Image (tube, rainbow, N blue to C red; front, side):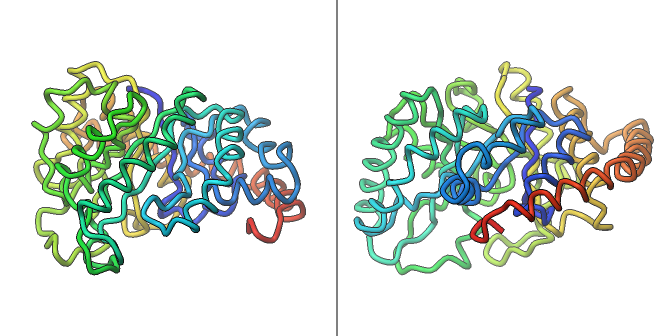
Length: 330
């Protein structure tokens, strides 16, 4: 459980590949999450070599990406989105990723649950066949925290049990679950739902975070998502220990948003996330001991030095990217 992915959520660097890559390299991540729509836009405008140049020159993987397809869309819209699949798969293979994320909308505007379930199952199965040929996996992502703000008159996948059932119904060996610990808890998920499964077969990626003990699931705010280990009776710590016990070997990340940070220093933030992941992978509680607190202080000092040392590199790379990037990718 050592393949660490840096996700861009909350960092404010989603449109700047060079910044995200620099942060990942500086703080010893193995891969990064890149906006695939942005990557395809670069590919279509200036070619594959340009689209891939930052990641390839840095020798870091495209660790994961959201698959930009709405599996509940109308037929014409869905067909249009699927026209880009070959390009997406080619870019993903070139950049070294082995999994993508499929976000499942928690409501539908037009279809009742069963009809929508069947549509998703059929469509994801078809796309999964293409990804299987490319030796890539799809991880279904529960969006339980989005229920209150989602539009549509018909309920769809809103619980951990429902998304697990969808994955089982699809039945493809390369279709599993991208487990976001925060979303899993919001969706009434429990640890025992994962204790009897083959985690390396069922789980494509794990994103650690905690749900605040005081959270109202019907009215969630950004402050209800906590860094792993910051919550009471941390689910992330329990999940990490289970994964260690069961020999999980897949990618790990921290699920974040802007409320997860206090000072806005990206290097300090990213180093803190890296340190938390290392603790979880080692079976340690990130906030359980004075040693952990001392270590995090040292980490922050190192992050400040790293930020100073990479500032000039960031500026130079940003100018290069701004000069070359297509308008649609900015």
